[in-house]
Length: 354
Ligand code: DOR
Ligand code: ZN
Image 1 (cartoon, rainbow, N blue to C red):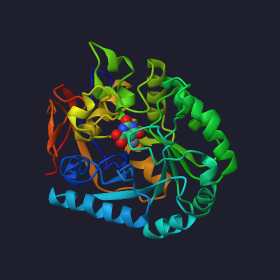
Image 2: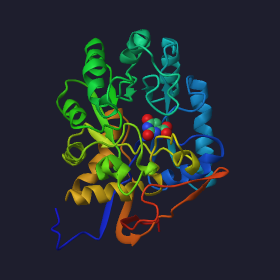
Image 3: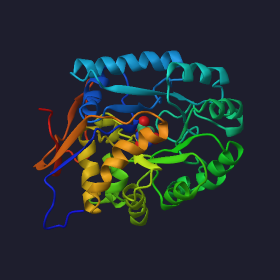
Image 4: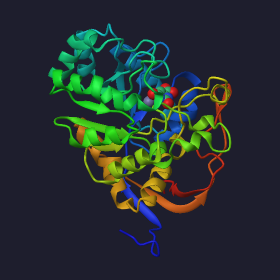
């Protein structure tokens, strides 16, 4: 560990993977996929397209479109890892096809919880036959852990989900592998840390760096709005402790979620923070602020593949201490995309390969 008087100038780690990513489809892929492929070897691609990715065949053709965008930008080694979208009607035999084809997870969106979740699950019981097969064949369930009932306060939706949905679900399927995605609360961190069995959690860079004040400071700042929404400072601190604490149950998942600028800066702005343009730089800032840069490699590069039972990467990346300013905006299909921390000075930068 370095002292503030002797800060490291470079950080070389095994190449990381992003275990939670939205890349959309079509022309948008050409903006966002190269950002991720420049940093990560693999990324777990979320299936919340319109319409959602509910069959293995759709996931495989989506994978080819993502790969083509990576190849076009010179990143032929980038590997998109694919997921299916769980609905009330996803059949158990689709899980067998997905497993056979190398898909790595099935995503649970409670209906109405977030962007493109209309087709999500209305009642967990309707999915039990499918979960049974997932448990049997070792297909992980990736959980957007929020209840959607309008009488539950928006800031409490994750904590209530643990008690009313997740604990009963894991009691009924004790051997099902579960990833509690993009956790945002102390309750979720504590639950994952202490629960029995195969459970892990991904943590975003923005939930490590910001608390909910970011959304409201100096006016409404829609680019900080995501779901689950940023929480109080005590929760941010609990997430930093979890991410930097060395437990193999916590790993990197950016939840980078691109939306066109005009749909973010809107009367009902979309949820999602775009961080893929500077993902590792943002995580490095968060880990450095906690004086835990030495814990970044395991969080970013080891714990994820270990949980998913995939090989760790073997090549390396280097981050350098360098002040630079990401652009305020990128071209995005016919529109634009504003990245988080665009126009702000960052103090770490990915080194380009020699
Ligand atoms: O903020 C979010 N954006 N949360 C999600 O769960 C979905 C994502 C998106 O797809 O935009
Ligand atoms: Zn997401």
